[in-house]
Length: 323
Ligand code: DGY
Image 1 (cartoon, helix red, strand yellow):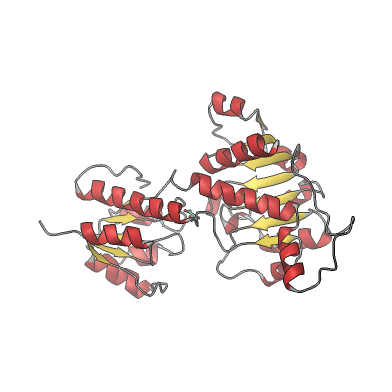
Image 2 (tube, protein in one colour):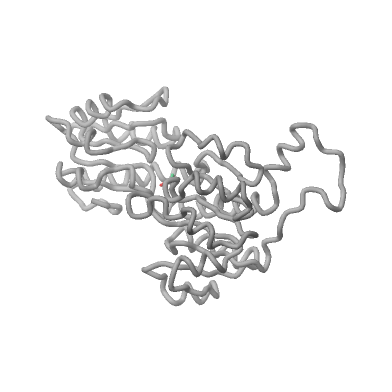
């Protein structure tokens, strides 16, 4: 039987590319360039499966191309707001993602942002590299402790729960959260977490607010001027979810005016472009979307894509079908 043809839009870890090569007639992206709309069209017209990543916009313009051969979009990543699911359905395309395997890794990164911004680690790094350090002194570069502080989670899905676990059991933080679909009682009990009825309550009470909601229309600029003003002036915002959840201009103003104390960001609206105003702010920690960037996790994500492809081509329901 001939192998299914699969197009991968970016460079994946070697181990995964090797496995893909064994199983499929795969077209790899050796030089890791960002594929154009024309290349994506060509992939959909020539291959049985397209495997994009969260940085490819798989919108209606891409999906509505004529003479498609592809029947499945097996995306590498848990988020799927880069794919127009309605257009995919309308084009009879099955869509899958890679949940679970990146949960802890992304929660670790959210904790990294929290700790970095609280303890001014980005500033400290720059201070040394710029040869500005004149030695230890009691009032130098003082941050804030995290132990005993309150972490407020907006959204309480897998990554938020993993972060809460690390924050509560590892750093002695109190956990509050808001989510229309709260986790099972045993998870809430284990975290000694408290649910709040509204996001505004979480914003007002938390010392650290961490965002864990999907991107897209429903959460677009959820964190805006008004919501930032509800936070304590001593509080910090952490975003490891999606850039467009935060209005960047509102955040820049809040960080400049002291409406909030700082922010740790791994994602940006319009990334990889980062709003100029953020670049000069000492109280912002900025990372280039590293949430799932450990080798173990990136390999596991790739293998999860392969599981989904194998199930699909064997006529089974892929485990991670989202459309
Ligand atoms: C995802 O998977 O959605 C992340 O943003 C990248 O790992």
